[in-house]
Length: 184
Image (tube, rainbow, N blue to C red):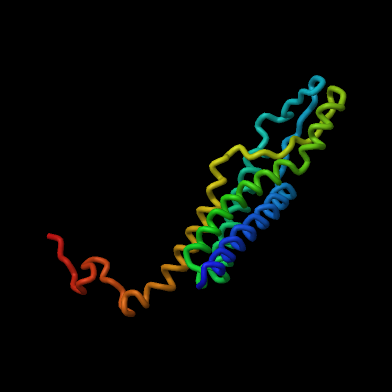
């Protein structure tokens, strides 16, 4: 494939993944629960139920959404781009997956943030309202690029294995020699 084609595949992978990240952030904002807060003083609110599972559930939804996003990015990217453009498309998909995870986080956390800040600034003490969405488990950001990479790796392994090995599988115990090695 010519250099221009590889660069186009890289750019398409990067942009396509980023767009999916914005969509994932919108989905996360729509499905995640938010903790109930009560304003205790002007500009200050506390969680009504400190044992609320809303924070953990929001993190769980984020993890689920980015895992699905990573699998979709890996599958679609592999079938549409990697098989034709090779490593440049893979690099674009993985970097795009990093961008997608960050965009999902940014989008999800900023949806409703303005309303939350407005309520916090203008509500009288005693008013109840929902907290803005935030991700507590920042390590979940690695799921999107991790699953994208894993899907591409498995797809490439499955596609190349029979051709590269001459149609034969290597003997797991004996290596490439074809015989079994006895361990006594």
